[in-house]
Amino acid sequence: MKFAGMCAGLDHDERELVRCLKSVTVLTIDDNHLYPGVNFAREMDHSRMKGEYSLLMEVHDGEEDVIIATRQKRGKITDLIIVVGGDDNTLVHVRGRMKSDLLKNLAEVSGIEELQIIAKI
Image 1 (cartoon, rainbow, N blue to C red):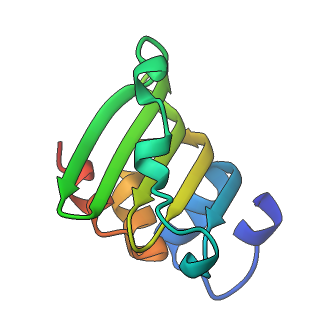
Image 2: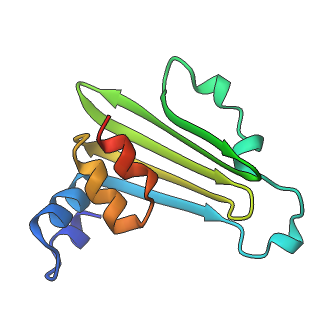
């Protein structure tokens, strides 16, 4: 991730964001017909995360579910977990030492609109 931060073509905010990241893990299901009825958000036992993680957002809208949680240390976000369940099952785990204002930049880079809402909180 640090090497990517040195690459040309990134603006200042994108470069700062990439340099703050240690790893990004993405798990998704492309063929929903192979795994009918799977919903990552419902499969996740986020009650076990309490104490270590702060639940920032939990939205259930019809068949779509979104859970966003962070773990912080010394005022910086060290872990960000985004779980989307339903038609688009996706789990994103971002590790690093990010300032909370960098979430807006992460939202713009990743296309996850819910992060822009959280960045305002």
